[in-house]
Image (cartoon, rainbow, N blue to C red; front, top):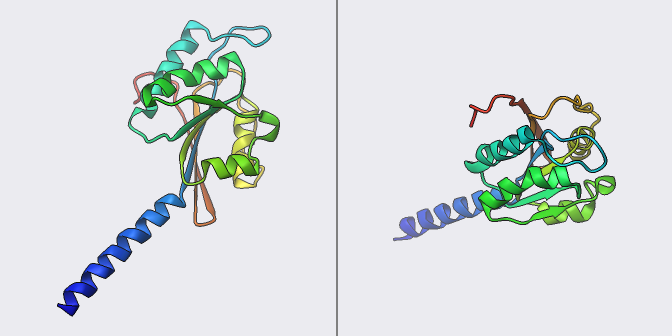
Amino acid sequence: MKVLTAVFILFYVTLSCQDIVKQNTTTYYLIRHAEKERGPDPILTEKGKERAQFWAEYFKGKKLDAIYSTDTKRTIATAEPTAKEFDLMVKTYDADKMYSSSFKEQTAGKTVLIVGHSNTTPEFVNEIIAEKRYPQIDDNEFGTVFKVTLENGKSKVEQETINSWDKP
């Protein structure tokens, strides 16, 4: 009986530790807004609307706890189809105070999508990893996604460029 109790306790402790590790893992997906018209605070083009819908499909098989966007029409419109897919509200963030202590606190242990711009998206990644590694995204590039994972004080960045709609 003591052996069975010890095995049960060990099993329970192992499961509890796994939950703690999961809670201590924060994942950020960062993308740039989709294709846009020209002018001040422009809206998305038709292709941009298609890409925004593509991102909703892309993230469909993933877990998202929150979605953040700058407060421009193009970033919010890019985020909205994914927010609808996950039944989430798009929250805005200040691009001048990207990775603030309150943002870190609000997103700790969560999986978060962040929609920004050609300059703010890689800058945000650099802020998260505390390195100046990623340059501004080319003005004609709209398919780059960064996945930043923070776990046990370490960061891991994966970068992918998706310009074909046939990729899930």
